[in-house]
Structures are given as structure tokens and as C-alpha cells.
Amino acid sequence: MKKDIHPDYHTITVEMTDGSTYTTRSTYGKEGEKLVLGVDPKSHPAYTGQRRMLDTEGRVDAFKRKFGM
Image 1 (cartoon, rainbow, N blue to C red):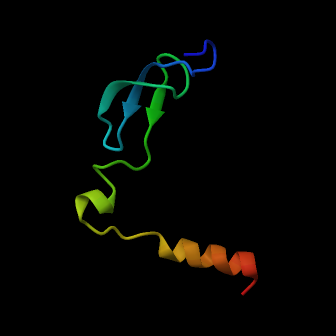
Image 2 (cartoon, one colour; image 1 turned 30 degrees about the horizontal axis):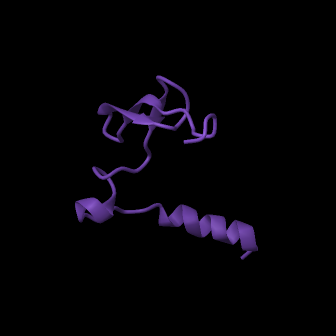
């Protein structure tokens, strides 16, 4: 392998949406950093099979503001 072309592979902490954490190795960030997930298998509907109510009113308002309707 060529030297000095590979990213640094180190230990980080991953925080799930429910607050639980685990340690893994990654090229993300720097040694000891925390990666906070906004969506993970514990909360995403594709994994849980449950539907969640989205902020549809906020999306409609943003569309109206953007396009002046």
C-alpha cells in the first residue's frame, strides 16, 4: 500500500437518537469525537415499521414563502 494516502482510522463515540452510545472505529472527525445521529435504525420508519407525523404545515408554509403563493 502507498504511504500517506489513507485517512486516519480511529475510535469515536456514536450517540443514537434515544441517548444511548457506543464506541466504534471510523474515519469521521478526530480521535475521541462524538457523532450525534439525527436518524438511526431505532427511530427511522423504514426500520421500525411505524409511521410518524411529519411537520407538513411547516413545509407548506416554506413552499408558500419560497414561491410567493
